[in-house]
Amino acid sequence: MIIESARRECGRNRDRDIIVATSKLVMKAKGYLVRLSDVRPSLVARLLSRLTGKNPVEVELVLRASRDLVAVVDVWPLASVLERLSEDPVKARELVESISSLFFVVTRQGLIAMDGGVDYSNVPPGYAIANIVGFDEEARVLRDELVKRTGRRVAVVITDTETNTSEKIGTVDAAVGSAGIEPVASGFARNDMYGRPKFGGVDIVVDEIASAAALLMGQTNEGIPAVIIRGLRYKESNKGVSDYALGFRGLGLRGLLRNALARIIYRLLWRSNA
Image 1 (cartoon, rainbow, N blue to C red):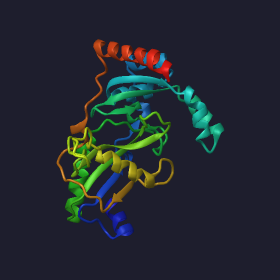
Image 2: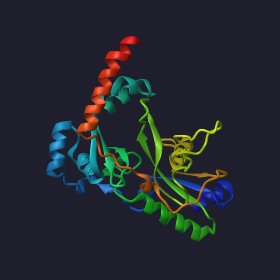
Image 3: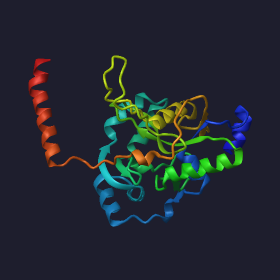
Image 4: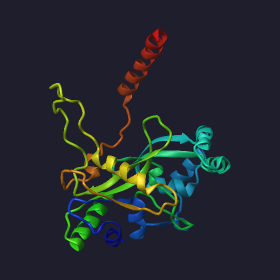
């Protein structure tokens, strides 16, 4: 489908094209959908369901897609904001009321994700998807097949939508798998324009690519699950997204105490002077 669409829309694939595909496209095409009626919630899922009000089947899927739980966040405080961001405030409130809480977890690949990537949108009723596969491997398989069929050296980035972490309401697309492209820039400690070593220069290139592609893909009924990015210079690599996943481990007692003390000092001494 990608090759045929590229032929129709932009005159075939070219060397150094970046094929950006949603994780949902990959999972639907390869039959990775989960039939909800086949899911039997575990004891842990049932306990967490009682504690959070979340559907036990959904909790079970989240647990299967994760290796650690970072936080559980109530949705209702966001109701008024989400209503303002919706074209249909009544429908927005009904949707918020149907979702009691969100689980932020560490996926099997070591990435932080909301509800483990469990998603019901744009899949048949009675089914769901979750980030239970290795997307770097899926990206490699897809890239190898594209190279084989087209004879072009391309890169592949597989994306998913996640909640923004910069204190702004909304979501952004991020890379969950990649192949044929260096995921992260290697400019750390490179001199800036004034000759100072830069504490930075490690842009997550594949995330920036994912966000750019999302401007065309959209999130609802646009029906654009793949985008070709052409003309971007990038470094080829055999590494994938998971090679750069740190994995959230949480703070130890020392870290918790240090953070608590720093917040107390800031609020009592600095804020009072502002």
